[in-house]
Image (cartoon, rainbow, N blue to C red; front, side):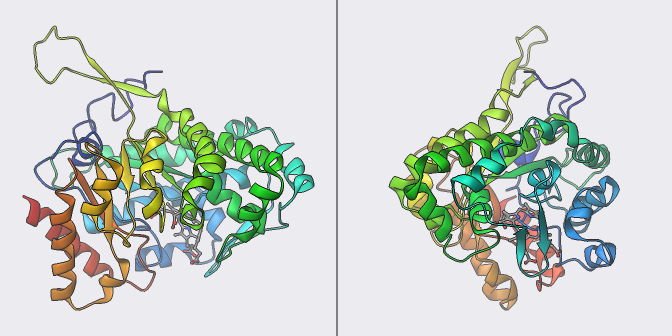
Length: 383
Ligand code: CP3
């Protein structure tokens, strides 16, 4: 499926942005940089806007979600916006009882830890999400409309990254009924009742895949699958019980493509068809990186526990990497932070292309002026 001519990738607005070029393995004039959780509590303008509005209500208010997405782009001049939403939004949209408790995370009305629970959940048709997705489509469209007309100094409009939670990470919350440290309920169900586990993963893959597709169709220029908690399982369990569902989720965006004029230039040269870039990230997934790349993604996101040059050797040649400054360093004295940023950039040279990011999300107590300074350092150091 070729994206519409108005899509920022098809229109040529973001197809040669630093971010999209890096995701296809090319180095640009400067290393692109964005931060996981760049939108959120580290920004006073976010805290002001959110007063009196619950998290999931904010996600489903197109004007508010769009404004929150744009705040860090304007402030830090990062090379990407990441859509302000949450991995549980598609569950909420099909009627699952879930809320996000501040300081805690997603909490469900019940746990879906056994075959009966899974049967109740999977009785909901994931296709219903498409009818409920108007607030997502509208929020993305508004965001992209502003990004397309704003100059952040990079020479192209800033691309928007769409995202979704991977089936395992969603299942970790669903089986537990809320956040947990060890994800024991999910790890138990996959062995205790592999049939129920598969049904849960298949259903979640379709729901989260549709959520991701909606964002790309509405104007996102890249897609990131967050398997935040996949680091809790072994490589063998990952390959048997998790990877197929993540691949199924991504199948919902793999057929989306855009056409660009052939780089070699002639007016009558045939256009090149490229698929929308896909990134895959998890926390503590050093042992899984090869398998996480193997499900068919362009770029692998790396957390802060392994250096990028080691990660590059694990994923194999030719794979762009994203990451991986330890977020704790954001609160260290500037000379310490600066040295750490430069070290990440140096090790990132081991990959064909590198998108600078943190090894996980921005801590809420981060001084936002430090983030702006990191962006300036990354752009300046690599220019
Ligand atoms: O800027 C961005 O990165 C975009 C927005 C984004 C949010 N959630 C907003 C949010 C993204 C990409 C997510 C994904 C998400 N949500 C993940 C995967 C990424 C990761 O961090 O590993 C996970 C595991 C969740 C589940 C979730 N939602 C958690 C653990 C929390 C934190 C709870 C807390 O208060 O500490 C949330 C809530 C949430 N999602 C917030 C934001 C900005 C905080 C809500 C607030 O401001 O009160």
